Structure formats: C-alpha cells, structure tokens
Image (cartoon, rainbow, N blue to C red; front, top):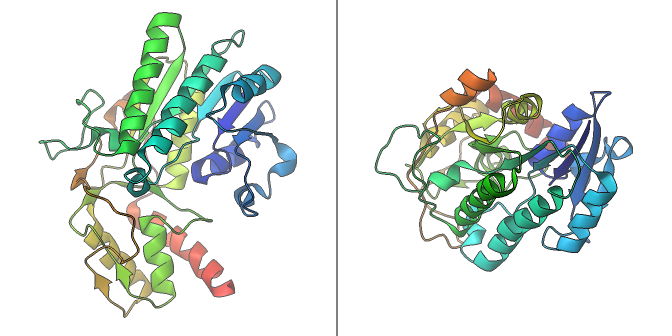
Amino acid sequence: MKVLITGISGFIGSELARRLVQKKEVKVAGLVRSTSDKDHLAALDDLISKITLFYASLTDYHAVRNILRAFRPDYIVHLGAKTAVRESFEMPYEFNEVNYLGTINLANSAMEIPDFKKFIFASTQEVYGWQKSKKPFKEETILHPASPYAVSKVASEKYIEMASRAYGFPYLISRATNSFGRKHNTGFIVEYLITTMLQGQDVYLGTPKAVRDLMYVDDHVSAYLKLLEIKLMNQTFNFSTASQTKMLELAILIKKKLNFKGKIIPRFPPDYHWRPVSEEYLSMDASKARKLLGWKPKYSLEKGLDKTIAYWKTKVGNS
C-alpha cells in the first residue's frame, strides 16, 4: 500500500505520516515545496529516514505528473494548500492558484495511474461561510464561501466531483473543523493564546463573539485514517466536535489554566493581516461520519488543551 501525502511537512500531514509509518504494509511518500526556510521540514525530523520526499510546487503540472508516475501511489491524501484565511484576502490569486489549480494538477495526474484507488481531499469548514441557520451544518448545506481561501476549496471540491462523474475518479472529501495541538506554529488561535500567555504578554482577540468548533490533532488524524481504511467512495464527510465555543470563552479557559494575569484585548493586533469579514458562527454536524465511518472525537476541548499546554510549557520554558 503506497500513500502520497501532499503537505506532509505541515501540521496534520506530519502527524498523519507519523501514524502511517508505524504500519509495516504502508510505504509513505510526501510532496513538499522547495524553500530556503531551514525549519521547513522540522516537523519531519524523526521521519526522514522512514519516508520518501519529492520536491515540487503543486502549480507545476509536469513536475507533479512526473512524481506520481515515479511513485505510483495507491492513495493520495491531499493536504497541501495555503491555509491562512486572513492572508487570502490580500493574496487571492496565489491562494486560488495553489489550492485550486494545484488540486486540478494532482487529480489529473492521479487519473493516469493504473489501478489508482482513492483521492482524499482536505477541504474545510470554511466552505459553509455565512449561513442564516445557527445550528451545526450538515454536508448537504448549501455552501456560501466567505473568503478567497474558502472559494478555492469549494472550487476544488466541485472539480473533484466533476472528475468522478466524468471519468470515474475515486474520491473522498473531508471537511474538518479548526484543529489545534501544533508543535511548530504559533500563528493559530489556540497556540497563539497559549504561547503568548506563557510569555506573560497581553493577548489580542479580534473576534471574541465568534463561535467555532475546536478539535484536537489526534482526532483530526484519526479521521484521515478512517478515510483510508473504508471502502466507501465519492462521499463528503464533516469531522467536528460541535463544541460551539466562543473565542472569548476559549481565551478565558486558557487564562484560568495558566493562571494568566495579563489582559485579553478584544480587537485584532496592530500588525494583523487585513480581514474584511469573519463569520460569527461555524459549527458542523459530524453525525454522518459517526454513522458510516464509526468515527467520533476522543478528546474533549479541556483534555486537548491540557495536552497542548503541557507541550508548550516545556518548549517555551526551554527557549
């Protein structure tokens, strides 16, 4: 069984690879972009000898095609993307080129592989965008993407669905909620709050009333393992905790756990990327995944936070 993971050096990609290399029957390869950033592969330090790495940009069709011809994966888990929603408003062309065109290049190249088994696409809860209803969204909810990033993911979903109907392309789509438990990136809300408070600095909270589901990394990875295992095809699944947590409640909870004495400032920091809109409510119903996949999150918000805090206490303390 040969699995190619795009975005393998990222948050979820590296953790998924770490789980897959434990299986003797699985050969893991990853697609990463070339960069001068010395820390680009930091998340893979313990895996380099156990995986095969290929270097290419997702926007380079011929390079992607040649890599797939060389490795001939049975499965592709397409996690590689530009993901910072706020940055997509300033770089809409780049986000759609990497995310949408990159998906087209990868999917079309996969269609040429004999006996290719499954293309698993990492979409996002952001595709639901603005909704009148304020209760967890089901997979059939009409999508209203509210950022260039979300638009690129919806477009990718539609291309994959078209390819299935037109060419018999086998796929599964994952719409996962906000995940946390990062070890190498503090630019996302949970890690930002924890590390900034640990350093004794006041924290900024640009959308204190916004409601989000929050899922610990191990539950996110287990979702992809389920998608690789099952025989179901051509389906879309929500993966979420339905925690419906307000960001101010999250900040206060972390503040209590850390005994933080500083301030929670209810606005974006002065150097924050311009973001003209942010949905007040994003929550998903994952009952389909529970029923058809037997998947359900094992970590409560508090348990996941405790593990994340324990990690960053050690790392911040050592630094």
